[in-house]
Length: 202
Image 1: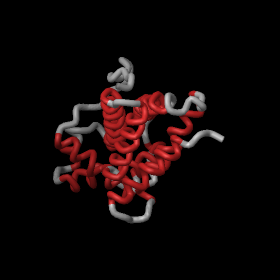
Image 2 (image 1 turned 30 degrees about the vertical axis):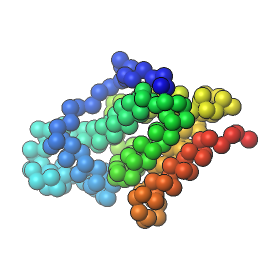
Image 3 (image 1 turned 180 degrees about the vertical axis):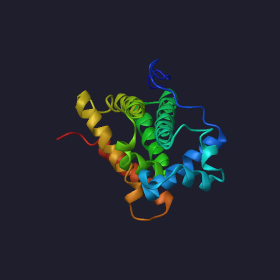
């Protein structure tokens, strides 16, 4: 079993409780933000897409900025929680890293709109929301770095983090990739990411 705390730090911000209706709103908003851009979407647009009035949307989220922040915070929270769960049950460092790569590939392929929104709309986040999302992202990078370093003793901590972030760039390229079937794309992404992370530094 790979060593992991299994719990977020005490100061790690928590997202709102995600009811089925809130999840529907977040998923729909992510699709709209990805297609039109954050500033090209109104609360009325989001409400219409989920079948409720714009004013009724405020019962679930305080603002459009709140929806964007919760989209990215929820995505980061899912990735972090899933990564910690994988590591807690991994039989070896190699198995842990391969599981992390496979799960991130699954997430990227299943949530292309979120990948696009995170890439394009970071500057639209408020200061507090940006800080909250960033805390989750840094914790997620730490989980990967801790999994990688036993396999790559040639890398220092800074180099290992850079390697992990480069792997994220590869795995998150799915929205811009050629349209091939999911299974083939998943196999391609995981093979390339695993090879990149396991290649010895020159």
